[in-house]
Image 1 (cartoon, rainbow over the protein chains, first blue to last red):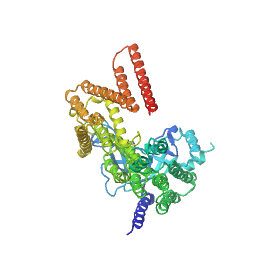
Image 2 (cartoon, chains in turn red, yellow; image 1 turned 90 degrees about the vertical axis):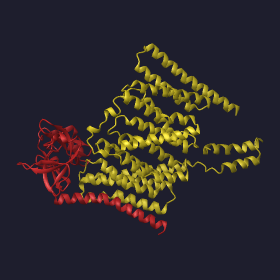
Image 3 (cartoon, chains in turn purple, orange; image 1 turned 135 degrees about the vertical axis):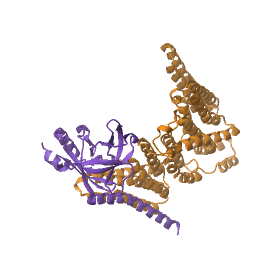
Image 4 (cartoon, rainbow over the protein chains, first blue to last red; image 1 turned 60 degrees about the vertical axis):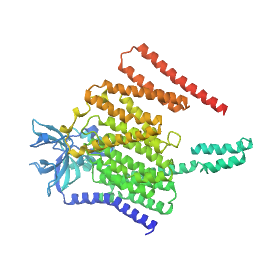
Length: 190
Length: 442
Protein backbone atom coordinates (compact mmCIF):
# COMPACT_ATOMS: atom_id res chain seq x y z
CA UNK A 1 0.00 0.00 0.00
CA UNK A 2 1.53 3.33 -1.00
CA UNK A 3 1.66 6.37 1.28
CA UNK A 4 -1.32 8.11 -0.34
CA UNK A 5 -3.57 5.06 0.07
CA UNK A 6 -2.43 4.62 3.66
CA UNK A 7 -3.24 8.25 4.37
CA UNK A 8 -6.61 7.84 2.69
CA UNK A 9 -7.38 4.78 4.79
CA UNK A 10 -6.33 6.54 7.99
CA UNK A 11 -8.43 9.56 7.12
CA UNK A 12 -11.45 7.35 6.35
CA UNK A 13 -11.16 5.67 9.76
CA UNK A 14 -10.89 9.06 11.49
CA UNK A 15 -13.89 10.45 9.58
CA UNK A 16 -15.94 7.37 10.49
CA UNK A 17 -15.05 7.69 14.18
CA UNK A 18 -15.86 11.41 14.20
CA UNK A 19 -19.27 10.77 12.63
CA UNK A 20 -19.98 7.74 14.80
CA UNK A 21 -19.95 9.67 18.09
CA UNK A 22 -22.75 12.16 17.31
CA UNK A 23 -24.56 9.40 15.40
CA UNK A 24 -24.52 7.15 18.46
CA UNK A 25 -25.71 10.01 20.68
CA UNK A 26 -28.67 10.51 18.35
CA UNK A 27 -29.52 6.80 18.05
CA UNK A 28 -29.38 6.27 21.81
CA UNK A 29 -31.62 9.29 22.53
CA UNK A 30 -34.11 8.54 19.75
CA UNK A 31 -34.34 4.97 20.96
CA UNK A 32 -34.99 6.17 24.50
CA UNK A 33 -37.57 8.73 23.37
CA UNK A 34 -39.43 5.99 21.46
CA UNK A 35 -39.20 3.09 23.87
CA UNK A 36 -38.28 4.56 27.23
CA UNK A 37 -40.58 4.62 30.25
CA UNK A 38 -42.11 8.06 30.89
CA UNK A 39 -41.56 9.74 34.27
CA UNK A 40 -43.02 13.07 35.32
CA UNK A 41 -40.63 15.12 37.47
CA UNK A 42 -41.76 18.17 39.42
CA UNK A 43 -39.34 21.02 38.94
CA UNK A 44 -38.53 23.40 41.74
CA UNK A 45 -39.73 26.95 41.26
CA UNK A 46 -36.64 28.33 39.60
CA UNK A 47 -35.57 31.89 40.21
CA UNK A 48 -37.31 33.76 37.39
CA UNK A 49 -34.31 36.03 36.90
CA UNK A 50 -32.13 32.99 36.60
CA UNK A 51 -34.47 30.79 34.59
CA UNK A 52 -33.17 31.67 31.15
CA UNK A 53 -29.46 31.21 30.85
CA UNK A 54 -28.73 32.17 27.28
CA UNK A 55 -30.63 29.69 25.22
CA UNK A 56 -31.82 27.19 27.78
CA UNK A 57 -34.12 27.03 30.77
CA UNK A 58 -32.36 25.96 33.94
CA UNK A 59 -34.31 23.13 35.54
CA UNK A 60 -34.28 22.05 39.18
CA UNK A 61 -35.76 18.56 39.32
CA UNK A 62 -37.42 17.13 42.42
CA UNK A 63 -37.02 15.19 44.62
CA UNK A 64 -33.94 16.95 45.93
CA UNK A 65 -33.37 14.56 48.81
CA UNK A 66 -33.84 10.88 49.45
CA UNK A 67 -33.82 8.74 52.59
CA UNK A 68 -30.93 6.27 52.56
CA UNK A 69 -29.99 3.73 55.24
CA UNK A 70 -26.23 4.45 55.01
CA UNK A 71 -26.30 8.23 54.79
CA UNK A 72 -22.78 8.72 56.19
CA UNK A 73 -21.27 6.32 53.68
CA UNK A 74 -21.87 8.76 50.82
CA UNK A 75 -19.54 11.62 49.99
CA UNK A 76 -20.23 14.91 48.32
CA UNK A 77 -20.26 14.70 44.53
CA UNK A 78 -20.35 10.90 44.47
CA UNK A 79 -22.12 9.44 41.46
CA UNK A 80 -25.17 7.30 42.15
CA UNK A 81 -28.04 5.73 40.27
CA UNK A 82 -31.57 6.67 41.31
CA UNK A 83 -34.01 3.79 40.91
CA UNK A 84 -37.27 5.48 39.98
CA UNK A 85 -40.88 4.88 41.00
CA UNK A 86 -44.10 6.89 40.84
CA UNK A 87 -46.16 8.46 43.64
CA UNK A 88 -49.96 8.59 43.89
CA UNK A 89 -50.04 11.83 41.85
CA UNK A 90 -48.08 10.28 39.05
CA UNK A 91 -44.81 12.11 39.79
CA UNK A 92 -41.44 10.41 39.89
CA UNK A 93 -39.94 9.40 43.23
CA UNK A 94 -36.57 7.90 44.06
CA UNK A 95 -37.22 4.44 45.46
CA UNK A 96 -33.59 3.86 46.38
CA UNK A 97 -30.03 4.85 45.52
CA UNK A 98 -27.51 2.39 44.10
CA UNK A 99 -23.78 2.76 43.61
CA UNK A 100 -23.85 0.55 40.50
CA UNK A 101 -26.67 0.64 37.95
CA UNK A 102 -28.97 -2.35 38.50
CA UNK A 103 -29.62 -4.28 35.30
CA UNK A 104 -33.00 -4.11 33.63
CA UNK A 105 -34.38 -1.23 35.69
CA UNK A 106 -34.87 2.38 34.59
CA UNK A 107 -32.33 4.43 36.53
CA UNK A 108 -31.07 8.01 36.33
CA UNK A 109 -27.56 9.14 37.14
CA UNK A 110 -27.50 11.59 40.07
CA UNK A 111 -24.80 13.26 42.17
CA UNK A 112 -24.86 13.06 45.94
CA UNK A 113 -25.01 16.41 47.71
CA UNK A 114 -24.64 17.01 51.44
CA UNK A 115 -25.84 14.38 53.88
CA UNK A 116 -28.35 15.16 56.64
CA UNK A 117 -27.36 12.58 59.27
CA UNK A 118 -30.23 13.52 61.63
CA UNK A 119 -32.95 12.87 59.09
CA UNK A 120 -31.00 10.12 57.32
CA UNK A 121 -31.43 12.01 54.06
CA UNK A 122 -29.01 12.55 51.22
CA UNK A 123 -29.42 15.59 48.99
CA UNK A 124 -29.35 15.02 45.26
CA UNK A 125 -28.61 16.86 42.05
CA UNK A 126 -29.71 15.71 38.62
CA UNK A 127 -26.72 16.66 36.46
CA UNK A 128 -27.91 15.20 33.16
CA UNK A 129 -31.37 16.69 33.35
CA UNK A 130 -30.82 20.34 34.17
CA UNK A 131 -31.26 22.11 30.84
CA UNK A 132 -34.14 22.60 28.44
CA UNK A 133 -33.00 24.37 25.28
CA UNK A 134 -35.09 27.12 23.71
CA UNK A 135 -34.52 29.05 20.53
CA UNK A 136 -32.65 32.35 20.77
CA UNK A 137 -35.44 34.06 18.82
CA UNK A 138 -38.08 33.13 21.38
CA UNK A 139 -35.90 33.43 24.44
CA UNK A 140 -36.46 37.16 25.22
CA UNK A 141 -40.25 36.87 24.83
CA UNK A 142 -40.24 33.64 26.79
CA UNK A 143 -38.22 35.22 29.57
CA UNK A 144 -40.62 38.17 29.85
CA UNK A 145 -43.64 35.88 29.87
CA UNK A 146 -42.05 33.58 32.39
CA UNK A 147 -41.24 36.46 34.73
CA UNK A 148 -44.76 37.82 34.51
CA UNK A 149 -46.23 34.48 35.46
CA UNK A 150 -43.58 33.13 37.76
CA UNK A 151 -45.50 33.66 41.00
CA UNK A 152 -48.61 32.00 39.66
CA UNK A 153 -46.64 29.11 38.22
CA UNK A 154 -44.78 28.22 41.40
CA UNK A 155 -44.85 24.48 41.87
CA UNK A 156 -46.82 24.11 38.65
CA UNK A 157 -43.90 23.15 36.42
CA UNK A 158 -42.90 19.65 35.49
CA UNK A 159 -40.83 17.85 32.88
CA UNK A 160 -41.44 14.53 31.26
CA UNK A 161 -38.37 12.34 31.02
CA UNK A 162 -38.05 9.12 29.06
CA UNK A 163 -35.78 6.54 30.69
CA UNK A 164 -34.46 3.38 29.11
CA UNK A 165 -31.80 1.55 31.11
CA UNK A 166 -29.32 4.25 32.16
CA UNK A 167 -30.23 6.65 29.38
CA UNK A 168 -32.60 9.48 30.36
CA UNK A 169 -33.85 12.12 27.91
CA UNK A 170 -36.04 15.15 28.65
CA UNK A 171 -39.10 15.00 26.46
CA UNK A 172 -40.82 18.28 27.28
CA UNK A 173 -41.20 21.03 29.85
CA UNK A 174 -44.70 21.82 31.09
CA UNK A 175 -46.03 24.91 32.85
CA UNK A 176 -49.54 24.54 34.31
CA UNK A 177 -49.80 21.22 32.48
CA UNK A 178 -49.22 22.85 29.10
CA UNK A 179 -46.07 22.25 27.01
CA UNK A 180 -43.85 25.32 27.41
CA UNK A 181 -44.09 26.42 23.79
CA UNK A 182 -47.88 26.37 23.85
CA UNK A 183 -47.92 28.07 27.25
CA UNK A 184 -45.58 30.79 26.04
CA UNK A 185 -47.67 31.29 22.92
CA UNK A 186 -50.81 31.68 25.00
CA UNK A 187 -49.21 34.06 27.50
CA UNK A 188 -47.12 36.08 25.08
CA UNK A 189 -49.51 39.01 24.76
CA UNK A 190 -50.68 39.06 28.37
CA UNK B 1 23.89 31.34 15.55
CA UNK B 2 20.67 33.29 15.50
CA UNK B 3 19.06 33.46 12.03
CA UNK B 4 18.47 37.19 12.39
CA UNK B 5 22.11 37.74 13.34
CA UNK B 6 23.30 35.81 10.25
CA UNK B 7 20.95 37.86 8.08
CA UNK B 8 22.35 41.06 9.57
CA UNK B 9 25.89 39.81 8.95
CA UNK B 10 25.08 39.06 5.30
CA UNK B 11 23.73 42.56 4.80
CA UNK B 12 26.93 44.01 6.32
CA UNK B 13 29.39 41.84 4.35
CA UNK B 14 29.30 43.78 1.02
CA UNK B 15 30.03 47.05 2.88
CA UNK B 16 32.87 45.45 4.85
CA UNK B 17 34.43 44.06 1.65
CA UNK B 18 34.01 47.42 -0.11
CA UNK B 19 35.74 49.22 2.78
CA UNK B 20 38.57 46.69 2.77
CA UNK B 21 37.82 45.36 6.25
CA UNK B 22 37.32 41.88 4.80
CA UNK B 23 38.79 40.26 1.71
CA UNK B 24 36.37 38.75 -0.84
CA UNK B 25 37.87 35.41 0.11
CA UNK B 26 36.96 35.93 3.79
CA UNK B 27 33.47 37.01 2.68
CA UNK B 28 33.04 33.75 0.72
CA UNK B 29 34.37 31.68 3.60
CA UNK B 30 32.00 33.35 6.07
CA UNK B 31 29.04 32.68 3.77
CA UNK B 32 30.13 29.06 3.32
CA UNK B 33 30.50 28.70 7.10
CA UNK B 34 27.06 30.01 8.04
CA UNK B 35 25.26 28.64 4.99
CA UNK B 36 22.24 30.10 3.24
CA UNK B 37 19.55 31.81 5.26
CA UNK B 38 15.97 31.52 4.17
CA UNK B 39 14.69 35.10 4.05
CA UNK B 40 11.90 35.93 6.46
CA UNK B 41 8.56 35.66 4.75
CA UNK B 42 6.07 37.69 6.72
CA UNK B 43 3.54 37.31 3.91
CA UNK B 44 3.52 33.52 4.41
CA UNK B 45 2.97 33.85 8.14
CA UNK B 46 0.15 36.30 7.51
CA UNK B 47 -1.48 33.82 5.12
CA UNK B 48 -1.34 31.10 7.80
CA UNK B 49 -2.74 33.38 10.52
CA UNK B 50 -5.52 34.69 8.33
CA UNK B 51 -6.20 31.15 7.08
CA UNK B 52 -6.75 29.94 10.64
CA UNK B 53 -8.80 33.01 11.58
CA UNK B 54 -10.88 32.60 8.42
CA UNK B 55 -11.52 28.94 9.19
CA UNK B 56 -12.61 29.79 12.73
CA UNK B 57 -14.95 32.54 11.51
CA UNK B 58 -16.49 30.25 8.89
CA UNK B 59 -17.02 27.59 11.56
CA UNK B 60 -18.69 30.06 13.91
CA UNK B 61 -20.80 31.39 11.03
CA UNK B 62 -22.08 27.92 10.09
CA UNK B 63 -23.05 27.34 13.71
CA UNK B 64 -24.97 30.62 13.91
CA UNK B 65 -26.77 30.06 10.60
CA UNK B 66 -27.82 26.59 11.74
CA UNK B 67 -28.96 27.87 15.11
CA UNK B 68 -30.99 30.73 13.63
CA UNK B 69 -34.11 28.81 12.62
CA UNK B 70 -33.39 25.84 14.80
CA UNK B 71 -36.78 25.55 16.45
CA UNK B 72 -38.75 25.65 13.19
CA UNK B 73 -37.09 22.42 12.16
CA UNK B 74 -38.20 19.00 13.33
CA UNK B 75 -36.01 17.06 15.75
CA UNK B 76 -34.77 14.50 13.16
CA UNK B 77 -33.89 17.33 10.74
CA UNK B 78 -32.01 19.16 13.52
CA UNK B 79 -30.19 15.95 14.39
CA UNK B 80 -29.24 15.44 10.75
CA UNK B 81 -28.10 19.03 10.36
CA UNK B 82 -25.82 18.63 13.38
CA UNK B 83 -23.53 16.66 11.10
CA UNK B 84 -23.34 19.40 8.48
CA UNK B 85 -20.48 21.47 9.97
CA UNK B 86 -18.49 18.32 10.66
CA UNK B 87 -18.99 16.86 7.18
CA UNK B 88 -18.10 20.19 5.54
CA UNK B 89 -14.91 20.43 7.60
CA UNK B 90 -14.01 16.82 6.81
CA UNK B 91 -14.53 17.47 3.09
CA UNK B 92 -12.30 20.54 3.18
CA UNK B 93 -9.66 18.61 5.14
CA UNK B 94 -9.67 15.78 2.60
CA UNK B 95 -9.29 18.29 -0.23
CA UNK B 96 -6.42 20.08 1.51
CA UNK B 97 -4.67 16.81 2.44
CA UNK B 98 -4.63 15.48 -1.08
CA UNK B 99 -4.48 18.67 -3.16
CA UNK B 100 -2.51 21.10 -0.99
CA UNK B 101 -0.34 18.83 1.16
CA UNK B 102 2.54 21.32 1.08
CA UNK B 103 0.51 24.34 2.07
CA UNK B 104 0.89 25.02 5.77
CA UNK B 105 -1.79 27.71 5.61
CA UNK B 106 -4.35 25.21 4.30
CA UNK B 107 -3.34 22.51 6.75
CA UNK B 108 -3.50 24.82 9.76
CA UNK B 109 -6.78 26.38 8.62
CA UNK B 110 -8.68 23.16 7.91
CA UNK B 111 -7.12 21.49 10.96
CA UNK B 112 -8.46 24.24 13.24
CA UNK B 113 -11.85 24.13 11.51
CA UNK B 114 -12.20 20.34 11.71
CA UNK B 115 -11.12 20.24 15.36
CA UNK B 116 -13.70 22.85 16.32
CA UNK B 117 -16.45 21.30 14.21
CA UNK B 118 -16.05 17.96 16.02
CA UNK B 119 -16.99 19.74 19.26
CA UNK B 120 -19.67 21.78 17.51
CA UNK B 121 -21.33 18.72 16.05
CA UNK B 122 -21.52 16.94 19.42
CA UNK B 123 -22.80 20.17 21.04
CA UNK B 124 -25.57 20.57 18.45
CA UNK B 125 -26.75 17.01 19.11
CA UNK B 126 -26.57 17.69 22.85
CA UNK B 127 -28.71 20.80 22.38
CA UNK B 128 -31.28 18.93 20.31
CA UNK B 129 -31.70 16.27 22.99
CA UNK B 130 -31.16 18.53 26.05
CA UNK B 131 -28.05 16.56 27.02
CA UNK B 132 -26.00 18.22 29.74
CA UNK B 133 -24.02 17.56 32.84
CA UNK B 134 -20.95 15.61 31.78
CA UNK B 135 -18.49 18.22 30.56
CA UNK B 136 -15.34 16.13 31.23
CA UNK B 137 -16.69 13.29 29.11
CA UNK B 138 -17.50 15.70 26.29
CA UNK B 139 -14.02 17.26 26.44
CA UNK B 140 -12.30 13.88 26.46
CA UNK B 141 -14.35 12.61 23.51
CA UNK B 142 -13.62 15.82 21.63
CA UNK B 143 -9.88 15.60 22.35
CA UNK B 144 -9.60 11.95 21.31
CA UNK B 145 -11.53 12.48 18.09
CA UNK B 146 -9.42 15.55 17.32
CA UNK B 147 -6.01 14.02 18.01
CA UNK B 148 -5.76 12.13 14.69
CA UNK B 149 -6.36 15.46 12.90
CA UNK B 150 -3.14 16.73 14.52
CA UNK B 151 -1.15 13.84 13.05
CA UNK B 152 -2.87 13.62 9.67
CA UNK B 153 -2.24 17.30 8.97
CA UNK B 154 0.93 17.83 11.04
CA UNK B 155 -0.57 21.14 12.14
CA UNK B 156 0.09 23.17 15.28
CA UNK B 157 -3.35 24.77 15.81
CA UNK B 158 -5.20 21.45 16.31
CA UNK B 159 -2.32 20.32 18.56
CA UNK B 160 -2.82 23.41 20.73
CA UNK B 161 -6.57 22.83 20.78
CA UNK B 162 -5.96 19.21 21.82
CA UNK B 163 -3.74 20.32 24.70
CA UNK B 164 -6.37 22.86 25.78
CA UNK B 165 -9.05 20.13 25.68
CA UNK B 166 -7.15 17.65 27.84
CA UNK B 167 -6.06 20.34 30.32
CA UNK B 168 -9.67 21.52 30.69
CA UNK B 169 -10.73 17.90 31.02
CA UNK B 170 -8.27 17.28 33.87
CA UNK B 171 -9.35 20.49 35.66
CA UNK B 172 -13.07 19.72 35.40
CA UNK B 173 -12.55 16.13 36.46
CA UNK B 174 -10.61 17.25 39.52
CA UNK B 175 -13.29 19.82 40.30
CA UNK B 176 -15.84 17.00 40.25
CA UNK B 177 -13.62 14.94 42.56
CA UNK B 178 -12.60 12.56 39.76
CA UNK B 179 -9.32 10.87 38.84
CA UNK B 180 -7.46 13.14 36.44
CA UNK B 181 -4.10 11.35 36.17
CA UNK B 182 -5.13 10.16 32.70
CA UNK B 183 -3.92 13.60 31.61
CA UNK B 184 -0.31 12.37 31.51
CA UNK B 185 -0.68 9.56 28.96
CA UNK B 186 -2.99 11.84 26.97
CA UNK B 187 -0.37 14.60 26.95
CA UNK B 188 2.30 12.05 25.97
CA UNK B 189 0.32 11.39 22.79
CA UNK B 190 1.61 14.66 21.30
CA UNK B 191 5.24 13.79 22.01
CA UNK B 192 5.88 11.77 18.80
CA UNK B 193 4.73 14.79 16.78
CA UNK B 194 6.91 17.11 18.86
CA UNK B 195 9.87 14.77 18.38
CA UNK B 196 9.43 14.72 14.60
CA UNK B 197 9.19 18.53 14.49
CA UNK B 198 12.27 18.86 16.69
CA UNK B 199 14.23 16.54 14.41
CA UNK B 200 13.29 18.70 11.42
CA UNK B 201 14.28 21.97 13.12
CA UNK B 202 14.82 22.40 16.81
CA UNK B 203 14.08 26.11 16.91
CA UNK B 204 11.36 26.25 14.27
CA UNK B 205 8.09 28.00 15.07
CA UNK B 206 5.83 24.95 15.46
CA UNK B 207 7.88 22.95 18.01
CA UNK B 208 8.63 26.16 19.93
CA UNK B 209 4.92 27.03 20.14
CA UNK B 210 4.05 23.47 21.14
CA UNK B 211 6.72 23.54 23.87
CA UNK B 212 5.31 26.78 25.30
CA UNK B 213 1.83 25.25 25.31
CA UNK B 214 3.13 22.03 26.89
CA UNK B 215 4.91 23.99 29.65
CA UNK B 216 1.69 25.81 30.49
CA UNK B 217 -0.43 22.68 30.23
CA UNK B 218 1.76 20.45 32.44
CA UNK B 219 2.02 23.23 35.02
CA UNK B 220 -1.76 23.35 35.33
CA UNK B 221 -2.10 19.57 35.16
CA UNK B 222 0.52 18.92 37.85
CA UNK B 223 -1.68 20.80 40.28
CA UNK B 224 -4.90 18.99 39.45
CA UNK B 225 -3.57 15.46 39.19
CA UNK B 226 -1.89 15.17 42.59
CA UNK B 227 -2.22 15.92 46.28
CA UNK B 228 -4.93 13.61 47.35
CA UNK B 229 -3.21 12.27 50.43
CA UNK B 230 0.01 14.10 51.30
CA UNK B 231 -0.46 17.81 52.06
CA UNK B 232 2.26 20.05 50.68
CA UNK B 233 3.50 17.63 48.05
CA UNK B 234 2.98 20.35 45.47
CA UNK B 235 6.02 22.22 46.86
CA UNK B 236 8.47 19.48 45.85
CA UNK B 237 6.57 18.62 42.69
CA UNK B 238 6.52 22.16 41.29
CA UNK B 239 10.09 22.89 42.37
CA UNK B 240 11.13 19.70 40.51
CA UNK B 241 8.98 20.48 37.49
CA UNK B 242 10.24 24.04 36.95
CA UNK B 243 13.85 23.05 37.58
CA UNK B 244 13.46 20.13 35.16
CA UNK B 245 12.06 22.42 32.47
CA UNK B 246 14.84 24.94 32.98
CA UNK B 247 17.63 22.35 32.95
CA UNK B 248 16.19 20.54 29.93
CA UNK B 249 16.17 23.91 28.16
CA UNK B 250 19.79 24.51 29.17
CA UNK B 251 20.90 21.04 28.08
CA UNK B 252 19.10 20.54 24.79
CA UNK B 253 17.95 23.97 23.60
CA UNK B 254 20.78 26.31 24.46
CA UNK B 255 21.73 27.50 21.00
CA UNK B 256 18.79 29.76 20.26
CA UNK B 257 18.65 33.38 21.30
CA UNK B 258 15.73 35.52 22.29
CA UNK B 259 13.05 35.02 24.91
CA UNK B 260 10.40 33.25 22.81
CA UNK B 261 12.79 30.76 21.17
CA UNK B 262 13.64 29.06 24.48
CA UNK B 263 10.36 28.09 26.12
CA UNK B 264 11.71 25.43 28.48
CA UNK B 265 14.46 27.62 29.86
CA UNK B 266 12.42 30.76 30.33
CA UNK B 267 9.21 29.13 31.53
CA UNK B 268 11.24 27.02 33.97
CA UNK B 269 13.23 29.99 35.27
CA UNK B 270 10.10 32.12 35.73
CA UNK B 271 8.40 29.18 37.44
CA UNK B 272 11.31 28.65 39.85
CA UNK B 273 11.46 32.34 40.81
CA UNK B 274 7.69 32.69 41.33
CA UNK B 275 7.51 29.45 43.32
CA UNK B 276 10.51 30.34 45.44
CA UNK B 277 8.93 33.72 46.13
CA UNK B 278 5.72 32.00 47.30
CA UNK B 279 7.78 29.74 49.54
CA UNK B 280 9.25 32.74 51.38
CA UNK B 281 5.84 33.11 53.08
CA UNK B 282 4.80 30.90 55.96
CA UNK B 283 1.43 29.74 54.60
CA UNK B 284 2.79 27.04 52.23
CA UNK B 285 4.56 25.37 55.15
CA UNK B 286 1.59 25.10 57.47
CA UNK B 287 0.03 21.71 58.18
CA UNK B 288 2.09 19.71 55.70
CA UNK B 289 3.84 16.37 55.85
CA UNK B 290 3.12 12.94 57.27
CA UNK B 291 1.45 14.30 60.42
CA UNK B 292 -1.40 15.54 58.24
CA UNK B 293 -1.67 12.44 56.06
CA UNK B 294 -5.16 12.30 54.53
CA UNK B 295 -5.18 8.55 54.09
CA UNK B 296 -7.92 7.88 56.63
CA UNK B 297 -10.18 10.58 55.27
CA UNK B 298 -9.50 9.53 51.68
CA UNK B 299 -12.81 8.47 50.16
CA UNK B 300 -11.46 6.94 46.96
CA UNK B 301 -9.78 3.62 46.19
CA UNK B 302 -6.13 3.55 47.27
CA UNK B 303 -4.78 3.61 43.73
CA UNK B 304 -6.23 7.12 43.24
CA UNK B 305 -3.22 8.29 45.27
CA UNK B 306 -0.77 6.71 42.82
CA UNK B 307 -0.03 9.97 40.93
CA UNK B 308 1.09 11.50 44.23
CA UNK B 309 3.71 8.80 44.64
CA UNK B 310 4.80 8.61 41.00
CA UNK B 311 4.84 12.30 40.05
CA UNK B 312 5.94 13.51 43.48
CA UNK B 313 9.03 11.35 43.30
CA UNK B 314 9.82 11.02 39.57
CA UNK B 315 9.81 14.69 38.66
CA UNK B 316 12.01 15.97 41.52
CA UNK B 317 14.38 12.99 41.09
CA UNK B 318 14.68 13.63 37.32
CA UNK B 319 15.43 17.29 38.07
CA UNK B 320 18.06 16.34 40.63
CA UNK B 321 19.70 13.94 38.13
CA UNK B 322 19.90 16.77 35.61
CA UNK B 323 21.30 18.98 38.36
CA UNK B 324 24.03 16.38 38.91
CA UNK B 325 24.90 16.57 35.22
CA UNK B 326 24.90 20.38 35.49
CA UNK B 327 27.42 20.26 38.34
CA UNK B 328 29.82 18.52 35.97
CA UNK B 329 29.18 21.14 33.30
CA UNK B 330 29.75 23.94 35.80
CA UNK B 331 27.06 26.29 34.46
CA UNK B 332 26.24 28.69 37.30
CA UNK B 333 22.72 29.54 36.09
CA UNK B 334 21.91 25.82 35.86
CA UNK B 335 23.12 25.31 39.41
CA UNK B 336 21.14 28.29 40.67
CA UNK B 337 17.78 27.17 39.24
CA UNK B 338 18.51 23.44 39.44
CA UNK B 339 18.94 23.74 43.20
CA UNK B 340 15.21 24.45 43.64
CA UNK B 341 14.01 20.84 44.18
CA UNK B 342 16.85 20.10 46.65
CA UNK B 343 15.90 23.15 48.70
CA UNK B 344 12.20 22.28 48.43
CA UNK B 345 12.84 18.79 49.83
CA UNK B 346 14.94 20.30 52.60
CA UNK B 347 12.30 22.91 53.45
CA UNK B 348 9.56 20.29 53.36
CA UNK B 349 11.48 17.98 55.69
CA UNK B 350 12.19 20.86 58.09
CA UNK B 351 8.59 22.06 58.20
CA UNK B 352 6.99 18.63 58.47
CA UNK B 353 9.39 17.32 61.12
CA UNK B 354 9.62 20.38 63.36
CA UNK B 355 6.22 21.98 62.64
CA UNK B 356 8.13 25.26 62.62
CA UNK B 357 7.44 27.36 59.54
CA UNK B 358 9.99 30.12 59.89
CA UNK B 359 13.16 28.06 59.10
CA UNK B 360 11.75 26.80 55.79
CA UNK B 361 10.46 30.23 54.77
CA UNK B 362 13.81 31.73 55.84
CA UNK B 363 15.68 29.24 53.68
CA UNK B 364 13.86 30.55 50.63
CA UNK B 365 14.33 34.17 51.71
CA UNK B 366 18.03 33.49 51.63
CA UNK B 367 17.85 31.59 48.34
CA UNK B 368 15.85 34.31 46.61
CA UNK B 369 18.16 37.03 47.90
CA UNK B 370 21.26 35.18 46.64
CA UNK B 371 19.58 34.31 43.32
CA UNK B 372 18.33 37.87 42.81
CA UNK B 373 21.70 39.45 43.60
CA UNK B 374 23.54 36.93 41.45
CA UNK B 375 21.23 37.55 38.47
CA UNK B 376 21.56 41.32 39.00
CA UNK B 377 25.34 41.38 39.25
CA UNK B 378 26.09 38.91 36.46
CA UNK B 379 23.49 40.66 34.30
CA UNK B 380 25.44 43.90 34.73
CA UNK B 381 28.74 42.12 34.20
CA UNK B 382 27.80 40.40 30.94
CA UNK B 383 25.70 43.33 29.72
CA UNK B 384 22.36 41.53 29.73
CA UNK B 385 19.70 44.05 30.61
CA UNK B 386 16.90 41.44 30.84
CA UNK B 387 18.79 39.29 33.33
CA UNK B 388 19.75 42.34 35.37
CA UNK B 389 16.14 43.47 35.59
CA UNK B 390 14.92 40.00 36.60
CA UNK B 391 17.52 40.05 39.40
CA UNK B 392 16.47 43.51 40.49
CA UNK B 393 12.79 42.55 40.36
CA UNK B 394 13.48 39.44 42.44
CA UNK B 395 15.28 41.38 45.15
CA UNK B 396 12.62 44.09 45.11
CA UNK B 397 9.76 41.58 45.38
CA UNK B 398 11.49 39.92 48.29
CA UNK B 399 12.09 43.19 50.14
CA UNK B 400 8.54 44.43 49.51
CA UNK B 401 7.04 41.13 50.69
CA UNK B 402 9.09 41.15 53.88
CA UNK B 403 8.10 44.74 54.60
CA UNK B 404 4.46 43.77 54.69
CA UNK B 405 5.31 41.05 57.21
CA UNK B 406 7.07 43.43 59.60
CA UNK B 407 6.07 46.46 61.64
CA UNK B 408 8.39 48.99 60.07
CA UNK B 409 7.22 52.60 60.03
CA UNK B 410 5.64 54.10 56.91
CA UNK B 411 8.54 56.56 56.66
CA UNK B 412 11.14 53.82 56.56
CA UNK B 413 9.11 51.74 54.09
CA UNK B 414 8.64 54.79 51.90
CA UNK B 415 12.34 55.62 51.91
CA UNK B 416 13.29 52.07 51.02
CA UNK B 417 10.78 51.98 48.14
CA UNK B 418 12.26 55.23 46.82
CA UNK B 419 15.72 53.72 47.15
CA UNK B 420 14.70 50.62 45.21
CA UNK B 421 13.08 52.72 42.50
CA UNK B 422 16.26 54.79 42.13
CA UNK B 423 18.33 51.58 41.97
CA UNK B 424 16.14 50.33 39.09
CA UNK B 425 16.50 53.58 37.14
CA UNK B 426 20.25 53.95 37.73
CA UNK B 427 21.01 50.33 36.84
CA UNK B 428 19.06 50.58 33.59
CA UNK B 429 20.59 53.94 32.70
CA UNK B 430 24.10 52.64 33.32
CA UNK B 431 23.34 49.58 31.21
CA UNK B 432 21.94 51.69 28.35
CA UNK B 433 24.97 54.00 28.42
CA UNK B 434 27.31 51.04 28.37
CA UNK B 435 25.49 49.54 25.42
CA UNK B 436 25.53 52.93 23.68
CA UNK B 437 29.26 53.22 24.26
CA UNK B 438 29.70 49.68 22.99
CA UNK B 439 27.85 50.51 19.76
CA UNK B 440 29.83 53.70 19.25
CA UNK B 441 33.10 51.87 19.75
CA UNK B 442 31.94 49.20 17.29
